[in-house]
Image 1 (cartoon, rainbow, N blue to C red):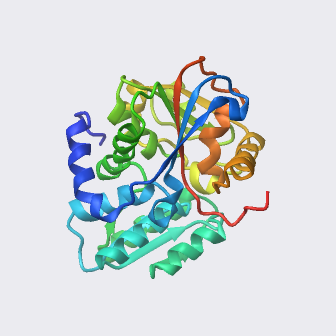
Image 2: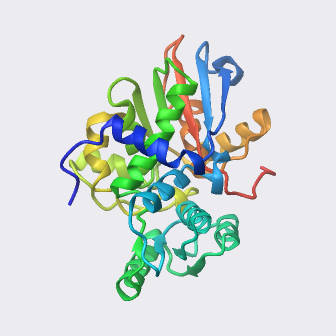
Length: 313
């Protein structure tokens, strides 16, 4: 059942202190919107792609392992790739066995990451939900602790630490754009900022999980395809995420695969920043003008993750 009480900023702050020894304080880069033909705006990119294991997921992974009792059988997680890499990294760091289930669409870069951290990796099924079903079956027979990629309190608390950190590094933000898959990142960010900063979700047109949920008044099944399917295409938004998003996310923007690809190219060509499709989606909403900003605004964009080998765009 979804949590009945809201996540408090104090809870996120406590978690940030707990996981701080294990995570990187990822850098920000200050830019002017004119550099990208976006007008006279202040633009701050949060390069969470430089986090351990290549994405923000590492925050939620460590939060789960440090707040919950881990059995001798270790942990099990289903993932499109980034969550699996994060859980594998956190488990290796803390000395726990990890069992990771990913679909066949997981990128070679993410599979290599997971295997490199010594996790037991199972590849099978065509989608994230196939991997999730297999992971749930393994949990029932093994007793391993499940670590959900987005629909879990500890995961949301961990991802919320990114917003805490971002606010410290870039005070005075007017809005923050972040990519949406299952909603763990946007949920954590919205839980921290609440209504003090406009939180904008960005998701692929071919995987509109939050868009359809907001239209329906609750999580519903959505298509799961497109360029960023290995990171932004679960079947539906999380039950724990939806109450936060429906209250604190100002709007959700849909972007095309071509627009995501263009954002990847711009990040590489102009900044030499490597981002996978899911990591570049939020930035694509600005470049495509799907999200319009006013002159003088201070706009924050989360770039995460960086698990890709495609730098020759």
